[in-house]
Image (cartoon, rainbow, N blue to C red; front, side, top):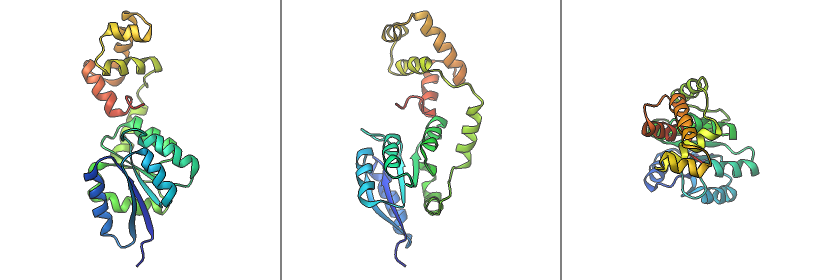
Length: 207
């Protein structure tokens, strides 16, 4: 049986790409037609091969997965893209799904669900793991971080003190402290380090 589903895999980790390639090689109706190490290569490979399904890692050097998705879907609105990520961060998922991703997969699920997800997305069905859907629904009930709070937590994540954050953003230290209190409350974090960890996991520190 000739391969009927062509796949592009974009991921900056060779071991991950090799694992995906091996898994897809076992399927007679699926062919891995191209691989990419970053978003720029993914865009070029998509233009060249026009794959039926694209597996797109979100966190890649240079042009990241979300930016590559934006470009690809802008040129090819019918592109079927499955997002690959380590975290079930709701911000990541929401952004990707709003952009038009057809699927969202944790890398820990690839061994058991990769092939079925490729086939389902190729058939025009969306695939979002239950735990990711649950996390999105849960966090929708929480108040999101404001733009200023995002700026503060991003500065804090770089290891800056309140004084440096204040100087960088042109606000007072007391204002920085007030924003951080709000951040801790909204992220349900115990302290600054915990807040940064949660913000990273949920996708707030991307872009």
